[in-house]
Image (cartoon, rainbow, N blue to C red):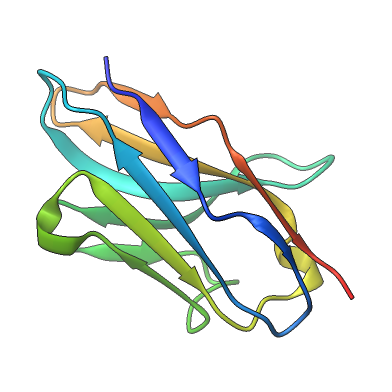
Length: 116
């Protein structure tokens, strides 16, 4: 099993910034991709950004140009730098990881609230 531990959520004013972090525990599995999803009240969980072990990134259209995902040295830690935050970014943000064997894991979630 892999455990994902997130940190960095909180309350921020519109236009502000937050940085989310997610660290994966050591395990037998080699992690291939890591990323962030979010779920707002009354909505389905949606992908925010992902990064593979090769460094390929993918962003939701709604966050492109404002959010940056990084995974230094392809290790098992992933960051999400969120700039220019908007009220519609308010959600619980979940860290995600998978292996090349098809296993996947989720973090417990961290709340991000954008409000004045």
